[in-house]
Length: 262
Image 1 (cartoon, rainbow, N blue to C red):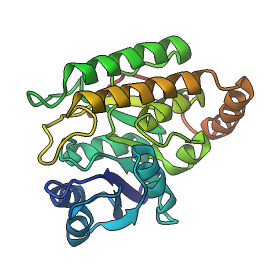
Image 2 (image 1 turned 90 degrees about the vertical axis):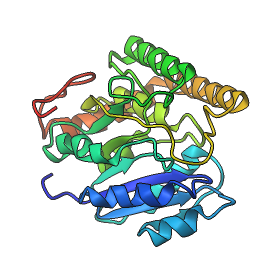
Image 3 (image 1 turned 60 degrees about the horizontal axis):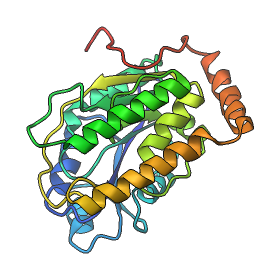
């Protein structure tokens, strides 16, 4: 997929302080052909500042998954790789090349960053986030045999592979649903360490308060059980589709690995 066109999707809710720098940092990598910021019903100047920094703005109703889905629906027709990251300044766009390179080389379909395996700024992740990532990873390993250590929002995926996953989650379970469906569909998955910073503005909707953490936790648990117990025919259908893709490429290698350039 050398020379593939890359789009960056950034869900954002009241991120007027960090969003412009996040957009500029993505552009500075020289990788994306477009950066889309999804304004998730912000009440501040998030959209205005993102647009001024060079992003294309898409509006979506509240809900992390709704924002991500709106960004995917708005992708340029020629986009082949989609990169997701948060708009709060905590993800490090300078690691984008590391995530997209295995897809460009056609050795993986889905590459996810792991904050727990990378260098984390003190206070950038609380205990609940680290525990939830490890627990979800353990459960997915038991169900699908794939090793994850995090539900990091910073990730890259082939557009055609994403389209086959049948994503439905509208709120905080979007990231987990993608990881579960990717594993179940037999995508070639790679997890790589990425650095993580404290957010550079605004307030976290998940870890910033107990209520937010509780609601997010419930949605993530609900997503895990919903996807895990979906009818087997849905899983077999997805697997057949992904199998067609794998037959034209390298054998799948899954999980927690580090390629030669890491």
